[in-house]
Length: 480
Ligand code: SAH
Ligand code: SF4
Ligand code: F3S
Image (cartoon, rainbow, N blue to C red; front, side):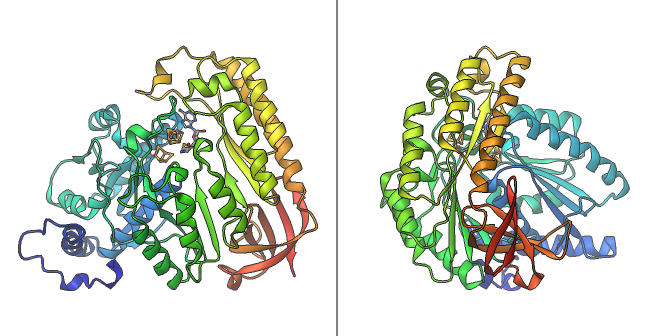
């Protein structure tokens, strides 16, 4: 495993090895030389900053980048004035792209002041050829660009950046390999995300993820469990299993295994107290999974189940493979089997062809199911997806529908969350409150946030908290 590798002893006199991950270990050692030179020229320890724009999987990738950066000799900061800045991009909606372009303008002005500063771009947005074209033309100061499939080669690409004069660009269309055992630097000491699968095969007609993340591939269970055991030994108590559609985990493995079976194995890992996962596609959520969740002592009482739309007609056009009635029946079954569960969801408004009646259907599902929270999005056309070529809904109509959906979500979520008042529940103490340092922010098993008086020594511990007052989406309370 990588943290038992003594990089100082890696031999870089000969050619780099062909095999992974040893090839990247070779480049980590080589990169240390480049960073040491940089330190001499700067006159201080070089700093590096990773900026994440996307989902939990994007955030986990950033931890892998940070792991390499620390290993090659950078001091990690959250300040973009660092000597090396890497933007890990997202392209799920257009506003994610616009944020990246905005930041590039800002970082360019800093680069003019620090000539030794280097800037890299990676992540989903870089898998779009039109983006690469635009950066080559208008953002020529960028030093390194790579994509989602070759992120494991970051040490090698980093060296190439130091060896070249111009912009280094390396993007792959797809890949069927998963490279294990590369460095990771976790953001939190007590909780961690873990990839269980990569890519997506669902091709919902609005979504760009299958195009930029490639085909679905599952990690082998032994690799996942090995990683979880090591995390537990390192003090992690909560893990989140990550995939675009965790319910289809294991299908392509040599020895196929279901997601529910994987969860049962994870449950056995000593030291892990809480298990979460993201995201579940309603079409693949099995009765087996509901039973495993019901019987588990560690799987959190929270399920994120993206609805997208409550209209069966729109769901069909979205290629979601379920109807309004099937979704409602599934949600009711889950709530019947696991009464203390919290359901959250994603909802999109403005998909091509959506009418005010379709929005009524969505609102009807929100009221019937009673979500604890919902992320609401305005549909954003993505180049190359089938929905982008369909006739779009006028902006004014989309905005009206969106406001109605948002109002309904807020109203039902408030009612749902308020049901916990007066209960004493276990919270994982996660951080000191930003606004009031006498408070600790904790998270309940069902993902609700509670602020309570306490000191930072509690962080990472599970404590019992009485929920005293509900403030819409969160509680204030007291340790008991
Ligand atoms: N794999 C997950 C979702 C990944 S993207 C799933 O199937 O649920 C996260 C959310 O972004 C989606 O649930 C969807 O609501 C939203 N989203 C995806 N593409 C979008 C688009 N083109 N416009 C607006 N929202 C979008
Ligand atoms: Fe996108 Fe659908 Fe795949 Fe989720 S399941 S990532 S929404 S294509
Ligand atoms: Fe965005 Fe890529 Fe995640 S497009 S939502 S960062 S998989």
